[in-house]
Image (cartoon, rainbow over all chains, first blue to last red):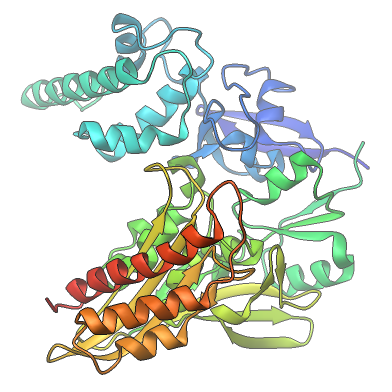
Length: 172
Length: 289
């Protein structure tokens, strides 16, 4: 059977790829698209290492068919930093040692970014519930949760300062 | 190479035509949070995957003219949670749907998928049964309706006929003084499968329960409507005697399995405990005491 041709948008750029009808989006990202930042942990939607956003909605790319990307907008970890400039979450994860082996990190970052977009002032409990679908076997989670809370505080402060100066609210 | 085909039709008629023609190896793809796991494990090798998310009737939430709701079968939990009114009218249904999996899973998983996957432990199903939700099903021979509790036939099996697709849920209008709640027992706080799940919906008038429905999950091959428990609540002021009678009715309805999640004795006892707690929360939401 012929492969499917899929046209989509990834991290703001148009992208095209070929896939089998039963390939997952994670297969397509890590294979033909060469975007290996999204990781395969469990391939059953339990670990969150393959987290991406699909039209701004947090999903596991292992639980999505590659064919479903047609005409949609995807964001992956590769689109998080702007050139050399890290997203505040990425910087805080580094500064606060919120990662060890790194397998869960891209999923943690994508999920945390989705949380902060929806809720810029989460409580610790809200962070823990939101990240319940992202497993980490190294850190014990505390450093990750603290890094997310610290970033949220920093981004709020930054946002207030920028608004005072009449600058569009953005970390970029 | 693979023999699987993928279709994402824009209309229900197109979807049903393809789904019916492809026979028993065809699968419907809504959120995919069960289907892709089954494909990955090799349990299912679909000849055809029909992605129904481009069909607007299946992905939208509408308030009906009589004050009820019509929820498309493929509406993800996260979208239902963002609806302005649904969670205010049906907080128990919403909390049940939102218990399914992680935030990532919530971005995709739907009540329709949860029902058609037909797990006895499906979280949304007891709450939808308690709510008195009716499903609309469409197939090659037209449309029909069915109460939610009639959909599951057993673990992994439904009463839908070949080529039939579950289109939407209709939730009835709510009388004043009504409330619902869903509770499940799991050994941790998140990301687990119900050992027992209990949904209660009730209406109070001057402190007296005038209507009630009870759905019970993970205690039988299918999620149960427990009419005897509802009967014990109706006409009472939800005092200890009525709650104990309803709890006993729930325990009596249990036909559970013994497995690593819970023993028969444990599930049977917990079914009654959850009934009392869920009924109490539903009553608080109904505006009672």
